[in-house]
Amino acid sequence: MKLVRWISGTIVLLAIIILIIVLPFRSMFFAQDSGHIGFIGRVVYILILSSVLILFRVLKGPTAADRIVAIDIFGILIVGLCAVLGIATGRSWYIDIGIAWGLQSFIGTLALAKYLEGRSFDD
Amino acid sequence: MKSRILMFVFAFAVWCILCWVPDTQHLIAGAVVALIVAAIMGSMFVTRPHMLFNPIRVFYFLFWYIPIFIWELVKANFDVAYRVIHPSMPIKPGIVRLKTELKSDTGLTFLANSITLTPGTLTVDINKDDGILYIHWINVVGSDPETTFREIGSRFEPMLKKIFEEDVVK
Amino acid sequence: MIDIIGMVFIGTGLAFDVLGCLGLVRLPDVYNRLQAATKCVTLGTCSILFGTFLMAGGFTPTGFKALIAIVFLVLASPVAAHAISRGAHRAGIKLWDKSVVDSYAEDKEGEK
Image (cartoon, rainbow over all chains, first blue to last red):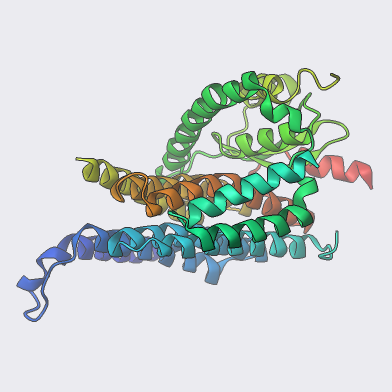
């Protein structure tokens, strides 16, 4: 059973990595694609790969604390994603979105941690 | 009052950087918002303003604490990455006590944050009255006070004591 | 040239991000996961932001905002990790079976 899990996980990871390497040469396999994706596109694909790993923990997590950890980390990843989109498009307000998202996720994490501890929001 | 003025200056500077290059409208709106923020939350920004203007402390903080902190942060990341990649996961976790002599809030906060971002350690709780930090350690070497101080505390505590404390009485 | 240095920073940050998320999946209990994820993802994202600062051409609006985001992340993420771990311990979530010591639980027993 453990072997099956290892093998399936390895296949998924390898498939995504190969996809990232092959993407620039996509026009050889799919006729209608332009094939240009560049550095930023690959960065976004890798960030999506790591958020898939985080979503696995959100779904499986045996306790509530695991899910809160995963959500907190997800918020930090999105700051990085916003920064990368900011250089890709050349518009600086993407990083504003990132900073605001980070602040919101930080406050949300603190509130969830207090809920976990069993205290009210007053103290 | 000093703390409120500092808070106003800080909030206004951050606003100006966020809407670079500022024009008149931005400056007026920023001043109003910074005034409101300083009026509401200003009293909890810095408790001892005279510490912030001491050039020796600022110099130590910028050129002694921050380089060591960044170096330890990079080391911590390679350590954790090694433990994650290794097939058999060489971890031996546990929660240990660390005795500290820092008393001020700022010093304790910086100590806890530095410990969280350095190799294999994570602050779980602080008991301020007894000066004890509870630390989750991913690779426990020993749980007696001397070992924990040598392995965890000795990197940052003397430095932070020099930066944030030393003449609390004065 | 400076674009290439920025790309190197972004690539390093991505590697640390993926490793941190892998740690979130592999490690056995909440506290270990918190350690791996907080450290690796914080430094990874800071590295991505610094690469953004370099690739955006230094002190332009994007670069300034990226620097502010770095300072904010380094200050905020240890505090969030500390709050979660303390909440988890108070909520009674056990450490891993093979843990060595738990002084915090001993001291809390003594208080009650």
